Image 1 (tube, rainbow, N blue to C red):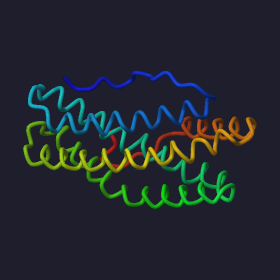
Image 2: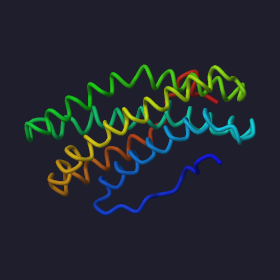
Image 3: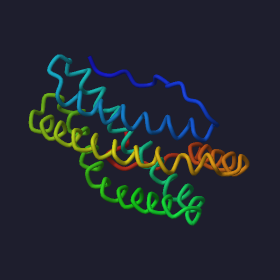
Length: 183
């Protein structure tokens, strides 16, 4: 059975913190779903196809928006507030670049499995890649949650509200899609 997506975890804190925490939870869920769809033998081709489509769409549409929010909105807001936070922001942005190629490969492999859910080589590569990305993302998210999230919570409520509003506005823009993401 593949993991169900769409369950909202209960979170304490303001809207901004809840939204970012939910984004992190979705990253964890979708990388786990990528591994499941690659490794599970007890799913139908239709289930594998649907899971591959969901993972592909998440990592080609929603995930890049989250990365852009962190780089374009969070980093400028928090830069210079604390040397430890500055180092965390530098590492966060460097890791985004490091993850990019692997995420693009994950999207491509999901595209393959969407059209050929029994493709053994794509499944094997996706299982390895999802395992790697799961660990890399977990370390990355833990750093953000330990240093960046608390720094956001220390910012003024009006700043948090403005940042949350900016993130929400970005979600309301028309979506740009890659050729792989489209469908």
